Image (tube, rainbow, N blue to C red; front, side):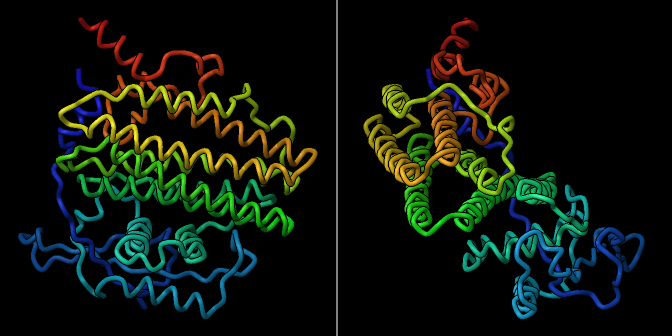
Length: 404
């Protein structure tokens, strides 16, 4: 019987409708209030012409004192450049139909989301300009923050991002874009963790960390490539929601990257209490590799899937990239000693545990899925003894048998 994945990817979740978003790209001179006081303004030439109503949408740039930035404050010249960049991404003065704001909590949220779509997707020039992204998030958050620690600083950043992402996509194209935004922000946060770890490390360790990051990036790209073959349809008819699944596993993998660095950073900054460290039963490198091979053994001929040999080959390539990343982490660990080494190695063990769970879940549960699939997946919070239990394919088969 075909897996849930091969069945569902043939069913479009929603009609793929393309909406055109337009908004003005400059500060409006008549508005001097904060974003918290902004209200949507409607203009209608006649009461009977409600369909012609439009909304005035604009950027409102606020002044931020250098000491109020979560991270380093940019120069005035850079800020002026970024304002022009955001303002020049779409025609100024175009009216926006009120329906386009459906699902958003404020004009501030809508404009900021559209800025990130423009900066990251429509023109990839600034895709990895993290300083620009940090400044745009500062403009979005109108509250003042004074973090007392590195941990609190990242907590504020992640809460800020979560608030921005908290809107309700209306159509399939919005759902796809939203899923991509979740993945890209998780990658963004992971890059910031690496930058902060590097800033607190000596030159010898920095060199090893940069090599480790290169191997991580190679592995992360290999996951994306593998998933597109494992989950993809050779005919190219993957369905309008398939990109949500691609973004979902990318986000999940980037979360693993964050866990490979976060505890170690907070230990470097003296903020990691012994009681805060999450420890699990040791997951050996060999145990993860054995699960890779078990996964490869589950591929069967399927009319909607690539040949089993192709799926095994691409997953094998991913496995080799994973091994190189783990080897690079071992090289970093070899330069550390004492509590630093202990915390870093514990991060590596937690990462191996998360990867083992991802493999046991057979890369299921991303994108459009069912409650049954979600229930049968192993969560990252599962007790350690569950790691030796049945994998998703075994659970799925048992579930289908129970229905007969």
